[in-house]
Picture (tube, rainbow, N blue to C red):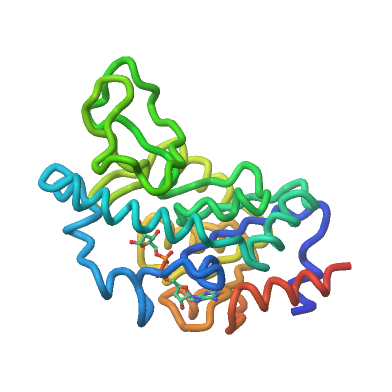
Length: 243
Ligand code: OAD
């Protein structure tokens, strides 16, 4: 713990990558745990372009349910510590796979959102009068599926679905951020790429790599230090040891 805290200096380039586990203590369901979303729902029925084309109402009902759940959650100690670091350290980057917006709500600026945001939408038909994407925080939606205010067609959630490519600019930012002095992979099962590959990229750039997770993952054996436990407890402890 003290070793990690000692490495968090004013000049250090610090990068943190988070996954669903960081929001678990807030009450946001993870994807692959015992009560994970992918244990109850089939991703191919709800989180693909084909699923939306087939049944936009069903997909929107699921997203509306998740939005309602998330709207009732508050950022936890893990989000708060990371928000503090984003203000305290000049060379700090946060990469997240989470779409819940809790890092932003805790006050972390410039979050690199790999998988988009559940609070953004865009026109399904890409109508020329609508912006590329915009915020929509209507909870619950007044009409499902909601209509594009610009063309009257469908809008879709601004998240990355299975089989879709990530925004290349976002990947570029995350790749650049992986060149750092200390890299944390926190609360992610590290099975979804390219996110899972950033820790290796960081290691090859010479970074000291740390995993924070109560369970083992495919990257556990490759990182320099494994801290077994919850993000909210361990980040708080690291924060307490900062000089
Ligand atoms: P997962 O649900 O796959 O993994 C959550 C991880 O969090 C697991 O490794 C848990 O052990 C860990 N965990 C649980 N509680 C924790 C806590 N309190 N503190 C720290 N860790 C804890 O979620 P992700 O790795 O984020 O993609 O999943 C990656 C992507 O797969 C998601 O972004 C989503 C999903 O399909 C898209 O939606 C595109």
